[in-house]
Length: 205
Image 1 (cartoon, rainbow, N blue to C red):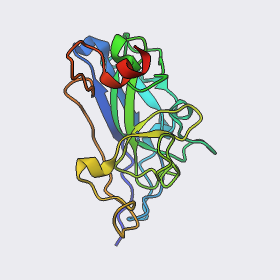
Image 2 (image 1 turned 90 degrees about the horizontal axis):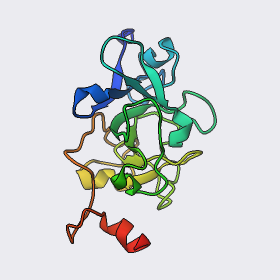
Image 3 (image 1 turned 180 degrees about the vertical axis):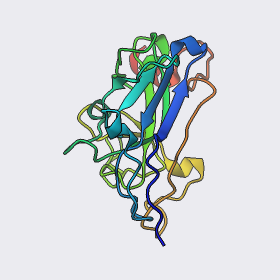
């Protein structure tokens, strides 16, 4: 028999900066129907006045969460609110929460002029299968995505590079669902060790 959905609050992705005084960035689960189980999400995002694709911020001291980056600024919910659900998240903000300074080009966050925000989406999100911004490849559940306001997001790191199954390369209806995400440091390539990401340096210097 099918189990009823869990109606408690459900954090989908979370990230924090050191020290913790910088706060916590996270998203809450939407109400999307899981195509494998047929069950809806917990709806904790809606219960708190948000949608599943929003990135929220909390100071960690018990106050209510506030909207940091709305789903549409990530390239989600392109046709209607709540049709995408952010599932894994990495944020490195250039200030103490509050204001989202979107990246204009990958790696421009190195000088702290913008916020680094990378994410994946939950299985069942409408954006899955949409050609991504950079390569025109269909977006998958396991991809780490780069936000493009107005969408669609770009594939920053493909699921296959993480060893995950995708419908791009295997005869499956649904790929592996990336559910949590973190990095130890900025995702950069700096072969000459001058503190500048190589791709940015080649393009602009």
